[in-house]
Image (cartoon, rainbow, N blue to C red; front, side, top):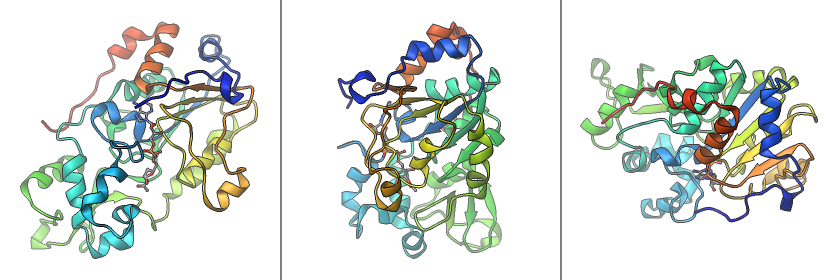
Length: 300
Ligand code: OAD
């Protein structure tokens, strides 16, 4: 995995990582928004979706689905939740530990620099570093909570993980022998994104100084088009192992087809997220604080 390209120069992006940290040091950058994807959690053992050989969509071949995305489609889940549960048992780590990147987000919150985290991730790792849940918008939902499709009873992630081990097949509701299918509170394809997502975009991005986009192929809408929000003077830092993907559909037309970072105030770091955030913290003299961020571990 990875890419030897690791500078902005070949793309037109002109800002250096050094200038970004300098602006944080001098307090010119005061408001930071995070946009994250599966790549921030691969170092915690959660696979991403699209990396060749390692990503979830590659591993789906054995489930004999009509097409790979079906496993994350609401209508398919309601008819047949078994492949979803087989996949979750295979891929969701037994022990959940947040990564250096998640700790970096908490550090930004501690420094009063974090406006919001917009994440596509459902793994709930942000919660293990105790980031205020109001600061997190889980655009595609979260494993943090789950709901019985029959009686509407809700449970937390700890309960869900225990039941994944105790039960076989789709996890079923244990309340009053209900036995309904439990669905983690995810936004599957066909579901609408949470209202909080749409309601916060304008106010959050209005005066954002720096947008940090990490570990995402930027191929799924409407999330990917968040990079076009915000004032033109807002700096953008894209940290990812590979180049951002093409945006399909109508949104692709409006965005010119490609997701590009070619503004003079864009910076691209094609490298591991944990490595780049460590570099940022080193430059800002935050290494000790980063190391000392407290976190919970879930499972064993
Ligand atoms: P993808 O798998 O599409 O993209 C993850 C990106 O992270 C890839 O470009 C990898 O190169 C990169 N990557 C992997 N490990 C990395 C690391 N340690 N450091 C830096 N980069 C790394 O995942 P997302 O963009 O999050 O939707 O996928 C978006 C949505 O597609 C998901 O939320 C999901 C899926 O269909 C739903 O389930 C609704």
